[in-house]
Image 1: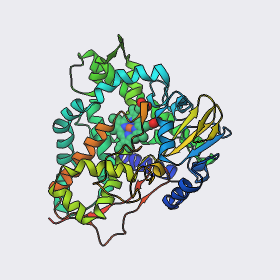
Image 2 (image 1 turned 90 degrees about the vertical axis):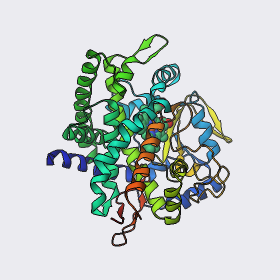
Image 3 (image 1 turned 45 degrees about the vertical axis):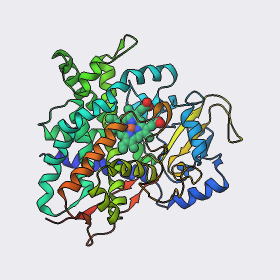
Length: 425
Ligand code: HEM
């Protein structure tokens, strides 16, 4: 394995972690107070915490912040009054082309209808046993078994990018290429920086990574199309996808695939980390899940509610609107605090407790409404494969008592940075 590629990947991950961490304060008690006393404020709450506003290039736009479940639900559901097009001005500038998350109205609806069938459980399940499970076990976990200890974040950093890389249809026998693609994806995510000194350099690196990734992906798309595109991979399926007689050209497929690497990598890395911390802190629960694997799915759903990796979502009012009596003028930004809404006691009984047996109710960890994560079945299946394999292969898994207790941190893109564990071997 080339050291340069390894270093590029690790420094790219550190860049993203720094960029999105924000000020280190325990936000949950603050959110609880906001829900009770000032559920909607006219303020850019996240900027105050030092989190870069990836979506809004113009800091002078009026901004409101909403903390309660019912208000976040109203905003996320009503994509006509609360639009996403502005995202194309910020993060979107790194992705000229098909950036689903920054599309609105008919354009989004048509594109989403074309793409959705590829991401449904019937397709995702066909990848579980053929690709996801063998890669996780054979490439990552079995070689670790004899060690008896590991930092699970080392595994978490690589496996989601490795899996999406394989699902896309890139060659499975090129480890340096896999890491290179991961490093590019992370450099794109580290693009928007708060610190003006870092901003220019990071933006340049993001642009370069985005371009390099584009050329690499485009080459594969052209090759797959030329060879008849008969595979069960994402590129082949995207070539065949159609809605109302419209299909995607090579440029659109390339830009969409390119956006998937950052969308699918780091989100799953951090969600896996938080899920494992929450379970390892509760050894009896982990044992219960080890003995009853039907509980894996509810543990994942509850982790996504309790510690959502994407802690807030922003929309822009397309007209004058009222939200729980607060007037929001056309053009204003609305920041929805997902981490707060997901623990709102009005929606979730004992919302501040981690309880995998709680009554099922939608949370916003994968978003909600028309833009809800298209990759959620892929993400949940990957997490389920990883947790099941760990429970099968690492007996008596527990936190390493010799190492500091892992901590879930970050005001945006939350997760642990280290996750040292030991097991019997
Ligand atoms: C645990 C892992 C993941 C989390 C927590 C997550 C979270 C989210 C969230 C919150 C949104 C909504 C964005 C918005 O409302 O503006 C979203 C959208 C999206 N996600 Fe994920 N995601 C994850 C994994 C994935 C994976 C594995 C893929 C691809 C295979 C993916 C692809 C996308 C795409 C393309 C969108 C845009 C959908 C649209 O705008 O219509 N995500 N994700």
